[in-house]
Amino acid sequence: MADIPDRVSEEERLKARPSRARYDKVHLALERKWRRRELRVDRMMREVVDVLWSAFAGSPYSWCGFYLLAVDGQSLVLGPHRDKPACSPLPLHGVCGRVAAGGQAFIVPDVKALGEAHIECDPRNLSEIALPVRDKTGKVWAVFDVDSAAPAAFDEMDQRWLEKILRRFEETGAPESGR
Figure 1 (cartoon, rainbow, N blue to C red):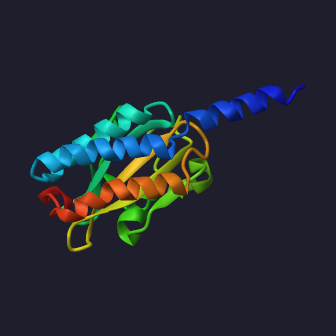
Figure 2: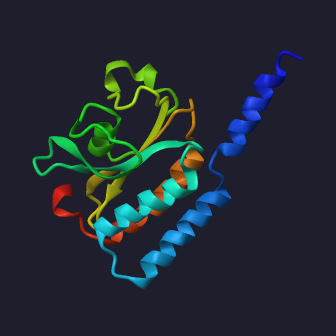
């Protein structure tokens, strides 16, 4: 009987997780917006942040946004984001820096386990996913970062859907601040 609260909280956690259907709705909403207009990077970043935030705020997103590679290439500068202030500029030794430098997505089930490799902007965040954003030449010019106050909030399904959404940026050039 003592394990029922654990089972209930696990069921609640799974219900709150983004599903394929919810990601598909987000993807379709963004594609509809982007079909009607010229693809402009600044507007697209804002739309990605707003639509994802609207769909997943608190379930499990506690923050999402873009970090753009600084002109000097030595740090990342905060771009469009929701919903609270964040660290900026970021040095390249944290999760986002690793993604910018290596060009590979990174899922962190427990940010505390990273030790000094984790740049803590909000101590309530327990897990994170960060993905590279590329231009039409394949060059990484930004990182899309999502934090959660829940442990192990992201998995490969989140990664696949976010990559699908971010792939549209490959049809554009990077903004000047993302060079």
